[in-house]
Length: 221
Image 1: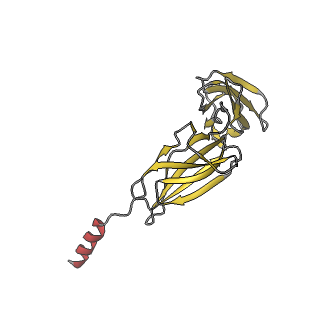
Image 2: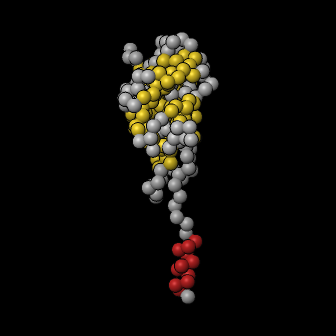
Image 3: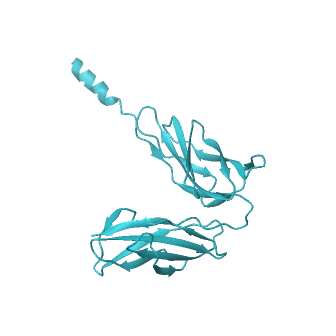
């Protein structure tokens, strides 16, 4: 009888659950952040990041990356805001990780990008995000011996003019595969099995500003 009671009690006590995902609020996704407070005579300003509370969370870990240098700041807080000093006129990406003291599993928010406002009146597009194939991935060609390349890109000024797709078997790729209109973010390319390929996307806006996705590589089976 005692054993049954203990079993019932143990079953009724549920295991701790991981946190829910934080929802980012500010700076807005793919925006120019103009609320930063200038730090003295430097070319930096203090920006306050904001997000919604997530359930079952004891600590938030904020990661913000300078997209020019790829240097990441990691900050921890129990609040739903975090002030951070950033370079002006520079693109950043950021996300928040929710942590619970009772479980090892963490949960991350979406990744958002923004420009910290500077003196410029126009900004380069954000570097294209590669969707497929991912770097290091092994893929199969289709019946036409093709592989489809896919990406997404965003721009604060909403004036993307074209995508220049570079592709080849050497890194970095220098052969221009295609120049796509801004509403076309896929292209098919002929491939050979058991070969490693490299590709990148250069996003160009109407002002002539451009950004480079960086080189990605994949292998064809």
